[in-house]
Image (tube, rainbow, N blue to C red):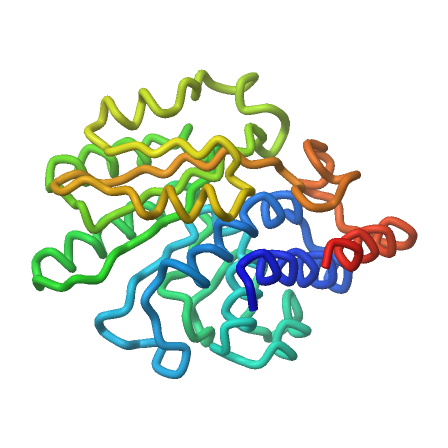
Length: 268
């Protein structure tokens, strides 16, 4: 399976899962589908048959409300059967709306309280250094999430400890829960902020382009944590969802569901 096809499948699962469960946050899932696909197809070292392998790379989805992306990619990569995705958001299911590690192989930590996942991931990277392990720790945050103070506390520690085994990926779709990021806080210019905290920064002009993402993840600097800023489109892949804040909360039903599925089928 090619990386682009994996991203398409993640998007299709997202449409189907939010449709069946009436869950929110499909826009956030669609914007980072390509990031997740590249990580699991081309970057991460892991063993789907041995999810607790000590030397595996770690990934923490700090923007935990986009958990469908992680559940979907784990199923597609063989951590558990794809049929398990039908249990998403159901009573008694381990596949909760915000990503959970309890009973879900391949998820290292439950997240949802914005900013905390990044801090935990930083601790994982610090632990890897202390144990002289070669694994790398990745965390995915939203640009709106970067309004949280704990993000910058994490950045200070990562830089101070020279955690070059730590990568923060910013899913920079320019939107957050109630509107555009620019109308909430002065987040941009983003790269300069991370650089001022001592990070090696790679700016990805099109964060939904898998080849640009692959190139970005190949760049790193010894002695510095890395920040990959992926400039994405919220709702990417479904024309009527792109850059529409309603799809932070709305779930696809009726004709809109059929249109979304058809658009994803047409791009195979």
